[in-house]
Image (spheres, rainbow, N blue to C red):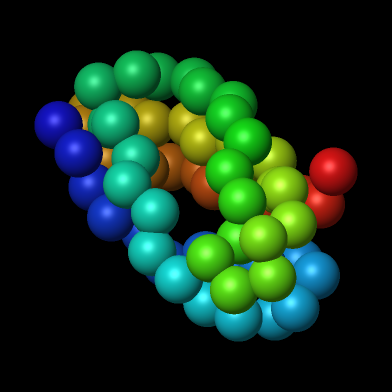
Length: 59
């Protein structure tokens, strides 16, 4: 199942949505900011199809 979550870029401060596959309990991936294009690491933990924890950090 896919949920959308709004995150904030740690570099430029802009907010945008990302898709998260909540069927995976723990995941870590890198995505680029849609505004400033800098890479950020997303760490997500999901439980029962819901996002229980989401962390965004600059690389």
